[in-house]
Image (cartoon, helix red, strand yellow):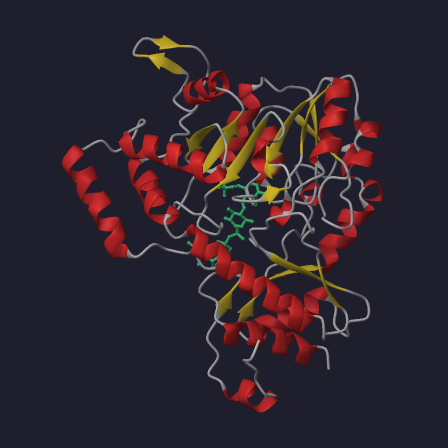
Length: 383
Ligand code: T4K
């Protein structure tokens, strides 16, 4: 990196606010022809041509066989659980966005929180078996920040106990391991295409399915359970993606490689420059992973002069809006905190991470100078 800022120039700058993320948008002029087509055709929803085109284009791009678009990731999770008629208890992580566990409550399922492992902050497979009871029907892990879970270990446990695995892959667009797309693992994987995600359709999401039959069931479930004009086979919901979101997704897809490349550059810049800041530790990306760099989490360790929260406030004072994803833990929210598995003694690694992690700004439009500003501000806070 050749950009650098002195302490003086840093304080001289009229500081522009930097948020944790900013949506990447295809040029407006590339989107307008899609709008014209929609206006001409007057098909706005219910599985129109852009919806179909985006499903196909995403299957090709992501290297998966079947995928059902959804109106958002949360309804994707709710619907994925419905598709496999998940009931009873589901083992999941407390270290995620609330939507993960909320999707279980919306299905009348009890979340059972299991701790995460310290290198990736993903569900710790070595702790899953102890949490299995006769009521357990599934495991819902999260590829947190896009770092792949230990999919092989999780699948072994699921096979041994006859459990389904539904991945919350909200962060995992485009992530690959040595065996290909991380989205191919488990029974279903659910993505989010929210404005804040690597690939966005304003709001949106998708469920990656292993076979055409499961996709068909999901297609029914996301359309109120309708199979045809007069046949309803399930108490489905309205989880459909509109034509306008699907069209926007088609325009976005042309730019996603460039967006991912820029994210990887920023990730590298952060890793190089933060290695000189004592007390700030970056999470490892994993050597065999094609990462999407959807977030840039750092751990503010005890040898950093400020606590994580004090650093978070310091950055805000300097117009840098980093975020404490994921604090509080899901298990600390009122609707979960009385569950036996929500006891913090059961979740030491997640509890510590929730107090240490700060997600730094990362998005394609973030300039090298912005990255320098973030790192220099952290370094100054530590002096
Ligand atoms: N599972 C996991 C693991 C998830 O992380 C999520 C969503 C889901 C499931 C559910 O998927 P969806 O149903 O959302 O598709 C944000 C997002 O709203 C949420 O989608 C995301 N996870 C979560 C991690 O982050 P907030 O409350 O932090 O968002 P907000 O509005 O504070 O936005 C953060 C920053 O992004 C803002 O400070 C500025 C910037 N921003 C945001 C929006 C919405 C923009 O520049 N433009 C925008 O339009 O939850």
